[in-house]
Picture 1 (cartoon, rainbow, N blue to C red):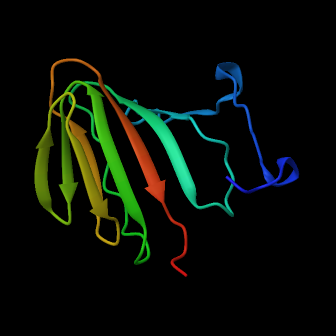
Picture 2 (picture 1 turned 120 degrees about the horizontal axis):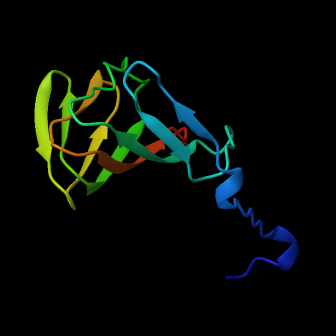
Length: 123
């Protein structure tokens, strides 16, 4: 509230400028919704996973990395450290990502979900 105009930063990321990454193996599509600013440590993506598809297992991140997921459409199984957690449309989950993790669409249609990765270093 007290910052001057010179201290504020605004980055507009129009739809056509949002990077889209596609994995031909799983069919996973990732749309980057936030500017890619590695020094900031926040990634916000919209993932779309086809029915029956899996992201494959992601390796554990360093301690302190957090992930937040919100399912917009479909059904998602989050396998965190080998333990499955089933999410339905509207469900959300948070986890500390220093464990292996994998996401599987176990529904009959595409699964769309927001993923936020917070890798900011704790000060």
